[in-house]
Length: 125
Image (cartoon, rainbow, N blue to C red; front, side, top):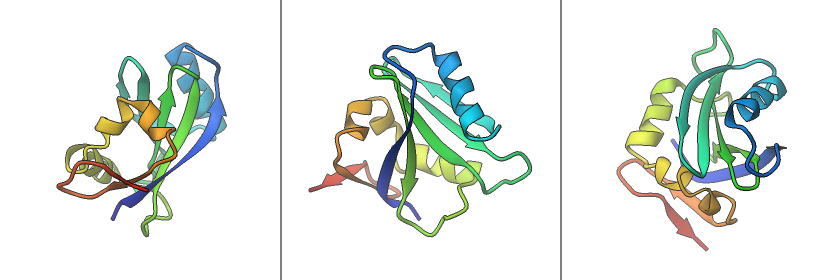
């Protein structure tokens, strides 16, 4: 589970957008998902959203506040339908996802990031 992280810009809000307005826009664009986890940093915001009633439908989004762009974060693994809240907690606790989220320039850098349990995120050229 997890491994190579993929990112895709999904919504542009504009530079230094209001975080609450950005979250509302993402929730509307993602067809009324429920926000399960919201973590803010000075330069970014992480959202974990799920389809109500589906415990394995979670998706991770990161708002890069400087340009005001939402990125969808996914992994080249076999979790095609989404992630559970427990799996998100593993990403945060065991894979140190927040070390990338709090520095969103690393996410938009184009580097190939890998996240594995027990290791800090690492990039491979």
